[in-house]
Length: 114
Image (cartoon, rainbow, N blue to C red; front, side, top):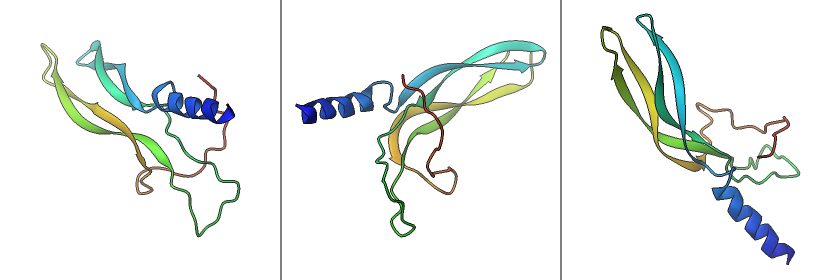
């Protein structure tokens, strides 16, 4: 019975509040004295990672993060010569953490539940 409950919790973690998914957000911007909101999408959520008891420098655990494919869109504002370029996430998935541009170490902080 405990195995079934654990399997159900792990399955829900991938699709529920923990799973990596697209989220609609609004970003307030100001151009040419006008304030407006840009509506876009971002990647949000947590990916399953195993937390090892003993950390070894020879065997670094693979950390997976919520990452996405991105494109950029341009919004032109009427009566303004400046345009706004903003990122748009087109898809999201859990992928191996890239240490070249991301901190991939352990997070020592309290993470609130959903």
